[in-house]
Structure formats: structure tokens, C-alpha cells
Length: 469
Image (cartoon, rainbow, N blue to C red):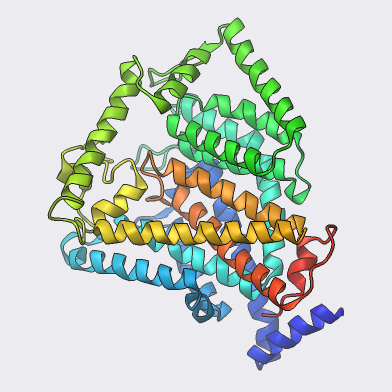
């Protein structure tokens, strides 16, 4: 055994007096990590079609949440994480959310718990961070697994998306619902494509640059969904600025131009069954114009104006109204309370098409402020770690932090235009990413603090392996 391996083993033995525990608990934690990654992939490939698996009201997300709580306690790292700056603000954020939830629990019951998952899923972030701090090698395992996921997603993700659009009448349906398998949303599709795009350009896990060309073609399939398109464009622009590679940028620009010109020249257009929005170069142009200004087309401007009116109403009754401190709480149907219901009796809309404003409407200005500070501290810590890794020429670490930032931006943008983080399809992947950044930053900081840095050829596993936790 190497000296680093001996050091890690000695440290683990010091915390667990029984050899049996040293052997079993890490193995069980790795099993949970595998299940967590599997859930991540199934939510990405099947979306809501996987979320409905289980026995109401206990679905697969509640099963994983229960396992996450057990794994979190087994890591014995919860206390150490809470004492970090990020852990401190997360604790304040959660305490405020609990305070805005408890008064409504008796009145609204299960609806209160359902609405609270938007912050309750933060348990996944805590668990993932604790796993990485407890078992640093799980970080590299996560990167390796994501590489496999991304390679599959760029080919099977479009299949699931097209099946959602075109084959709804032939897909299997969950009994008693209108939910097909798969059933993914355009913004979920765009966010995961953004993560895979960044992963390929940053060269993590021997990702192939040609992935990016395939992903650009995949993005065109989701062009009619403005939130997903904007999330991808913002993330792609960020990663290209972060890692400017002019040769690759020229290739990507040329490939994008060829794809669009092909659609224009051959007038490629098709309309998914059950919708009036066609997929074509003209629709792509409308979507891009509507992102930055007004459009002449009512189908785009109608949804845009409806959102803006609702957002202004939330602003008025919080910042300048009676719900400044605690919002309307968790449990009340905001769409009905605010007068903007657009769902169906079977599946009514409950929250505004903006996850950030959900925090404002349900937990007031302090709730939104704590959410903003929490995400700001996370992003700032990842930026600092990225810059330090670049300075020390630790390329695998800098690539990891750049990828996390890019993926996070895609989630933040998509959450600004849809009921996004309120469900497990995006909520669990988002908090997983949050935990990866938190745990990775902690491991990296300890490494830099306690050891000299290696050369540019040093791999992530070698770098993380020297950390004694």
C-alpha cells in the first residue's frame, strides 16, 4: 500500500474502532452513490415518467431521500460540513424555510410537504458532499460515471425527447395518470445537453470533442422551448469564454451554420402532434428574438406576458405588500391564490414559472435573500477553486470546477422560466451538482492546504488520494 493509502486507512480506522465497520460502511456508501447516480440518469432519460414510479404518495424520490438520510448519518461528516461557511448559510436558509412551512402543515397536509421539496431536496446536496469528504475517490468515480451518462445522453436523450413529442399516444402510461414513459421537458433536455457540452469541451474523463458537434444537432430538436434553449446558450457561451479554444470555436460555429442553412435551404419543418409549434429554422429565429425582445407571434408573446404579469403580482405582494416577511407559505396553491391558474383539474399548476420567485412567494423577501446568498457563496467558492487550480496548474481540478459552474448556470437559467426545481426531475440533479461542488471544493481546499502540488500530468485521483479526512 502506498504512503497515501496507508494514511487514509489509518485515518478511517481512528474514526471507526471496529474493523468490521471500516469494511462495511464505505461499501454501503458506495452502493448508495451508485443508486444516486442511477436515479440521476433515469430522471434525465425518462423525466416525469420515472418520477411516477412507486406507490402514491411514496415515489422513487422519497425512497432515495430516505436512503440519502441514512447515508448522510453514516458518513459522520454532517457536523463538519455545517460548520463551513456554506453549511452555515444553508442551515439559516433551511431554518427559515421550515419556519414558513410549519404553520401550514396542519391545514394543507400533504400539499405542504409536496411544495417543500424545492428546499427539502437540499438533503441530497448535503449527502453528496458528505460522501465525497468521507470517500474522496468517489469524486473521480462520479466523473467517470458522468462520462458514460453523457455519451449515452447525446444519443438517447434526443430519442426520449422526440418520443415525448411524437409518440405520446403510443407510449406506456402510468395507471390513473396522463404521464407517459418517457416524459421529459424541453428545459430538462437543454440543461443536460449543456452539461454534456461543457464536459466535452473541457476534456474531462477523456471526453471526445466531436461530442460537441452531435450536441449542437441535438439542441436544434429542442429549439421551440425557449427556456431550454436559453439555458444551453448561456452555459455554452460561458464555457467557451472560460476556456477559449479558437480552433474548436471555429469548427462549432461552422457546424452550427451548416445545420441552420440546411434547415433553411431544404425548408425542413415539422409539427409535433398535439401542439401548434413547429420545429423549423423560422421557429428558431422567433425563439431567439423573443428571448431578447418582443415578438410579433402571439404564441410566444402570450406565454411571455402571462409570466411577467404573474411575476409582477408576486413582487407587489412581497416587496411592497403584506407578505414581505414570510410569503404565502408552503401548501397554498399559488396559481389559484394569485389568479393565474393555467393547469388542468387533474394536474393543476401550483407554482409560478420561476423557481427563484417560488422562494419569494412562499418564504418572503428573507427567503429569497437567503436563497440568493446560498447560491452566490457556492458559485464564489467554485470560482475561487477554479482560479487557484489554474494557478497551480492542476488541470483536472480546474476542468472539474469549470464544468460544475457551467452546469450550474444552465440550471439557474432554466429555473428562471419554469416550474423547474420544484420537482425531482430537475431538483435532485441540481442538488446533486450542488453537493459535488461543495464536497469537491472541500477536498481540494484540504489538499492545497496540506500538501505540495504536483505537475500538470497529475490526475484527479492522484490529487484527491492525498487528502486525509
